[in-house]
Image (cartoon, rainbow, N blue to C red; front, side):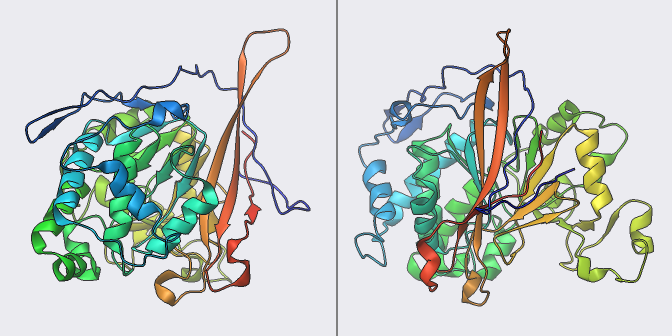
Length: 411
């Protein structure tokens, strides 16, 4: 289980075990060719190493009618230039959607990643906060990222957020990763703001182009075969007897077809919608969980979709598949991160002052990877260290400071 204690500077680190992982020289950018209106990219490997040099990150995508670098630069520097509303063009965004769809479809629906990287939760159209996040954590040309979904809706600038993230995904396909959240689907964006933003600023056709990409995004990631990441939570199907090891779990998720909408039930629904059991649902004087949880560990979700699950479900899930930690998003938490199930499960939320109504901070989980050689042998020892960076609401005087804190497991 996760354990740790605070130290003077507010940092508690997690250090890892020996992992027999070879370090490749680094994946190379795909060769891209443009013929007429068609963009051709070769398939990328399913196993995506994050160990890249800065030079290898340079994009080779240069369609004549759409300058990706200029498009991304205009978005990424808008805050520094004092530009509140970026001049987005419909055809540029359509082209970007087509390029992004090709890249994400060339990779697996289940990402298998290596550190170092930074894991971010919900951003929900808060474009200025996304720019502040990159100021705090580093830019994607030198820093590896995994975002856990919910890029649109709620906030006022969903188009700017999703265009910047899609642009980074195309520029850095093997170091910048986007998972699907429950808001990346037709039904939810139709209600909670993204549809209206597209229609008001452009048209419904543009919204449908983004939906085409949303339906192709990966739904889960496994980091170093130790950490499981998704937007929502654990599906009851994963605890069926036929799934006995991590490879079984991977094969089940890889079997998810794409493109796909988010169904009302099943594995995809649970990965995007499920929640840990809220402690407020429990009787503080009770010695055990409510009866509905005693048999399976799953109960009805007050959202009306998927399930809530008990700490015992987390323990069984991690134990069965040889994992140490689960990282997810999906719920606003006051400090930007919140642990569950004896610190073996953590919720990350990266939109500070969410919707202008919560005085919450935004959290980013930072995973570093250190390699040492064992004495008297040539075996490499991989240490994974985890901590959190905090993005405070901008209105606070301390909003530009970095607070790093972590309670973590020793691998």
